[in-house]
Image (cartoon, rainbow, N blue to C red; front, side, top):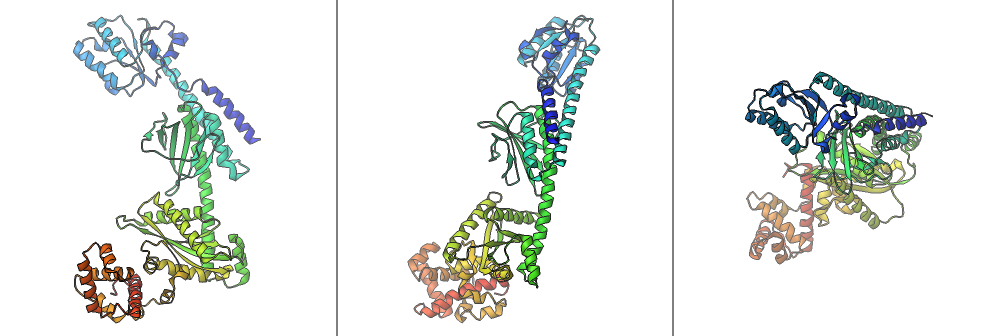
Length: 577
């Protein structure tokens, strides 16, 4: 009943204002009964100019205080003693004001009145200004009062229209029976009022809802221009042209969330009354989106607390576990795998605490978008995703799948900040949520050594690591004491790391490249962009310092492992070496 009443009120109100959307123009004055004796001297083709105010020229300097859009009343008496040079200078100032028209009254003694009027006519034609003339006995105060009356009527109409749309959009939000459809209803009503398609987008520019004929993809182009809607607004308007002109209203909901309301000028021109309707709709959308955001954040916190307890093994009884599984909407005996995601910022991009929170929230949004039905847990600067998986899926199939997911998440994040790099560690598949802590522990350890895993797999740019792929290094991951880890580094390699000369770093890079290239000197030199003899000299130097026998496969393997272990030591304590 409320919805039906709302539509009928809005439709009646829209019909009332259709004929008066652009305000009062100069032509409207000539139609009024009190302006029947007004004559058009010049500029009939510009009688459609909109009147935004009215001013009597009582002194020449008044032109400096005109805002723009006014219709000016003058008997030229203010310029009675001006020379033509001074008169032309005063009048020329009007070209900057975009005035709507001039109303003249002759009869008073003005030096060179005809010459000055002739100049006014020429000036008006050049600047697209109509000139009207009223009889001498007509009072300028009466003319001014009549024009102001029309202007005030227009303002009152706009105010009433704003109040009507505002009240009814508010009623639509507060009285909605189905909360899931409120945003769609707001956009539908707005589209009917302005007779153009409308769409709403979130801060990631994903379409929240759209009416028929609206674009569901938003791209704010570089040539989009700031648009003045003709009314006071707390929001920024942009206007961009393409196949169709779009008006974009940018709304800040809170420090994180944004709303973009997009109106496509498809059926009719967008005008000031449409802006008024849009402002009312934005207020209703703000209320509804903030309500939805608050509910979602509360649900996230509740889910986050449950996830934290499950992942860290803090649930003791089966009954409590069953209850929490039910609250999360997951099966207690399903097959799950834990993935730990994080971000590495470019060194050039120094992020403050607030920015880092924003980056983590961005990562969370990306994960939700690209991992179906994942339960997401915010763990400070990392995001933990619990993913239900097929028990029969092979490791190779899953490895390919998770790499594709991480690439998509990376693309999503990079669209907002190209300096951020997504990294992920993956734990094993476990049966039943009671065993999630095991997968979580592995995922954390795999995440910690994503860069090192790249060294192991000879993929320096690796972004995702499965704990099961770490091989023998899974055992070393259990150690967190650098002194213990150092025992797995050959004594000769330790000597190279302790080599206190400037060449040390070059020698270490050369050793790693030489081993990666299966001890091929030519390829090593090419990779390092050095001469073959330089590479050969460095290898001889390394052999002399370390005593390694490059023909002994066991020694070479030990050195390979030692290089990786040193990376692990650096992770634990950068100052240890």
